[in-house]
Length: 130
Length: 303
Image: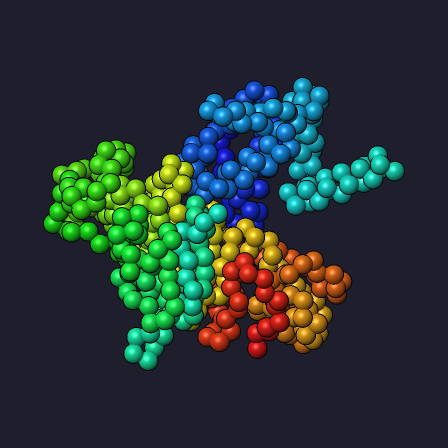
């Protein structure tokens, strides 16, 4: 089952943090259709958060038809956000790790790596949409 | 939804000093509300007026639909109150305290209290005075919860607790709200944990209510505006300026936005809840804003 965490200094509202974490888990395939989400009470006990915050997050996810609550049974994943490419994640991750190693061998620090990655990412996105 | 607590122009004066002045607010049922303010702002006075320990000098307070002072039998059995420093009879064992709670409160849920004590690992035969500060706070909270109140008032429950004890205390409290739909009003001058725990906010400063409302809405409507140095009259016509600072070249404002901000000369940023609270807490007497959800056209500018 998914475990949530709250970052008090992120500046992101607590309910949005929960929404993001569920979506992230759906994208990465950590949550699949039919999986059960923790009850409000379990989340409250886990991360000491206001129950209305959890309800609000679940309502939002329900609104996007990502999850559905079945009265008396619990809340379940209804739709996934994992793309068909999920299977190739492992191979892509390996080639990314190789690339990161060569970047650090070339003397780039982590900030330069991120900047290079982001600017390249943005450029290719522009090309693809152009 | 009905209100668990409602005050209208509630005021309390000690001699020539107003401890609370013209306080009008409503706390909807089912909320976990934070009552925030610096020491001496009137937080304890508001709580004591709400449980009928104090009599108002002017104005009125309604708790669960009745006056705690004039109709105590209607209100007090449905109210839980833990005073500052969670006072317990130091020579009583935890079991004695449970007996006392049971004898004094008709609806006292002894089973619930024992179950919670066990879960918290608090031995029933230990004297209250021998418990740690965190455990004493937990015992006081469990006793109040076992009364199965509809409204629970807590005066500075977190003040003397270390971060771990604080988290555990809040966990017990929130677990109870899931179970029973209890309304909570807790005063605090520690701002840290409040955003994750509370969903409603009341800010008191200088004996007056500065801000009341849904915590998240408050977070969304307050913005920091940064722009070239300029006169703020135009923006103050539409939005409420809470705080402003000027340098030779730059003007920085913290505003409560009453709608979208169109003027492109301002860079608009979100503000953390902590910064919002501090901005209101810094306000002095006489700068009070019309509080609560009642619509207010922001015309005031902090001088």
